[in-house]
Length: 486
Image 1 (tube, rainbow, N blue to C red):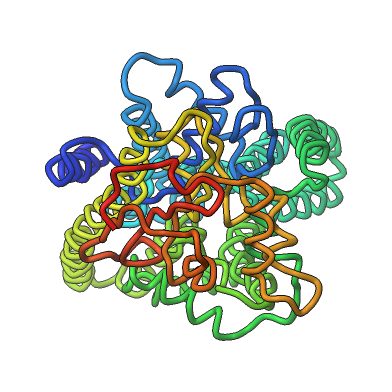
Image 2 (cartoon, helix red, strand yellow):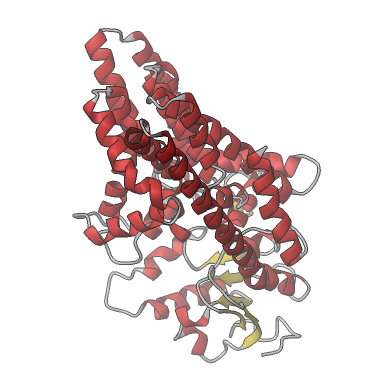
């Protein structure tokens, strides 16, 4: 009930703010577009007839096909799925906490802290795959703790299909399962678990390889670029800040909980500890190259770790206060008040996120819907809402996720300026309009022939790449769109 009430408060707030359902990230519309294409039988195509590996969450994409096949609004069903996975995350958090040694009351406290964590509620109603991945990772960790490798390995494989970070979970579960089978000389479940995991992973990886020439989605090429190196310590400070802003008190005591588990020789807890500590290390290696550090919008790549911070934090807290009932009640009150304050701020932030996306990408898509000639192409910095609300128009993704052929242009092998190469790329494809935040394309948007048609200011922006989205005409179709107010 707590999960449903809090999520309904978030959803009710967005309806009051923008008048209908929305999403706090443009990326949510990317998932919905892929899902719509799957629902009508077009496969993993973003634009009709062009298969791409732009979905980092093929399992979530497949689930969202139901949102387009069921009666009613796809956005409503998407949020409903997220709420179900938030409830499942809370239930699995309680089960894992109990499995790792927390008393029953404290385990229920862990469950209640899940919907009291603002970024997890945000995830539930965001249209993103975060909580599907979180629930699968927790289910896999719980099965590992119970030495049920026959189920743990395929569940971790499903987690990989929900988020590419799941590859680390598969590796950790495989190592632990192998060590356990070796020590007990019981290999039957190991073999069956490996076979089931392979049956889940191999077909999807082969499809990605055939479509894109790699088992990894195009997101890896765009955000990591294949650049690996020694971890940057500044990246760990960024991760700590992300987790601290959601669970400030429990993050401090999580270290105590981890040390406690390690000292009691609970080997089954090592996979959960390895996941919590290993994911930042893995991403820190990827963060070695140039460009922004890979944490996702608002740090969302690390939201799936928050239930573990809760569990380990409560384990450490319980060790400190278990013999002092008065102290335990005082700490519980402080924790409750702190989470309430964080929830209020998280609700405010979520509403601003939704309003930002609505004022920019969604507004631009609706503006173009009545003005863009049939068959005209749109070159855009954000690929989600513009394609979802303009399904009959080809979208050129300037970030390269849905248009991977653009990537060599964005990273030229010679010393040429990348925007010149981008102009040549667009000239060969002749889009009717360019929809970007101008500060990211200073040369291109000042080139003769690119004239502003409509501007979309974003009051109080905290979400989008810039404070004003602009639709430009292009030199190849200067009169294609009329009615703008530059």
